[in-house]
Length: 162
Picture 1: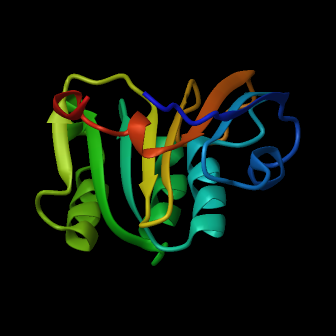
Picture 2: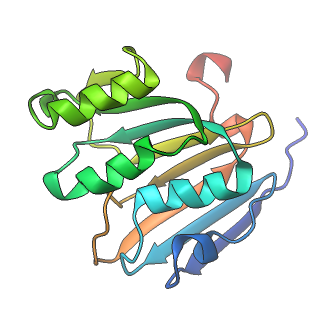
Picture 3: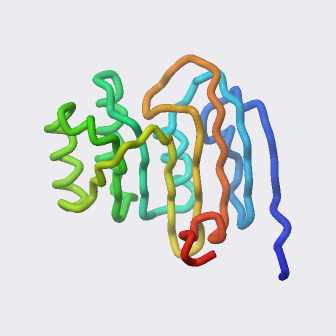
């Protein structure tokens, strides 16, 4: 088996999401530690700045009242060509109008209701397959947070393809 060597980097990321991310390349891998100065949405937007229009899959536990503005910012981004929101089943009773808006933008099947606490996102184009994971929520939260961003199709394949 010929395994490509990944470019791995660990960094204290005390700047904004774009500067902390740096330049995305094939095989890119970054582990970052922040002071909470940016959110998962900021990281997604920084990725879209580099890769352009993409399919986005966003996993989160819920959308709290203080995250609504951040989430609505994501709804306005026309670089998201299609999207899937994977959210905890209990979120059905919260932010109904916001979730209806998500479905009106991305389609009736664009929300999957599960038992979930993951904070994960994929950003996929023909050229890039990004996986973002971390402790950060959708909103600004001035606490130490960790995240990692990996590029590479092998990280995004389903178990049936491995």
